Length: 101
Image (cartoon, rainbow, N blue to C red; front, side, top):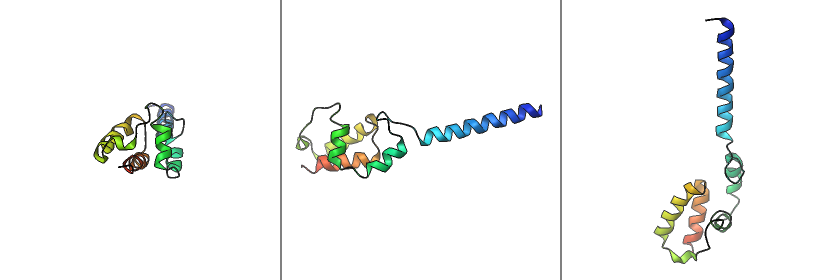
């Protein structure tokens, strides 16, 4: 193999690897925030605030006592994936909704 070709392939691989690492660690969500930014701000928000920002965009506000704790767990777990919520955000939202029961 030609030395220039080998160096070119190594350089291309290094660039692809660096880009892949960079893009996977700083992907942006539908809210426009990167995963790192979202993780750093999620701990500062209460469940009620997260619920208002994430759930009421698509759903009419339902009274939290409309469902049992077990039902809210299932609903929030399902919606975590659809709403692109982190685990911490989903837990806070579920705790907020279950606090009315």
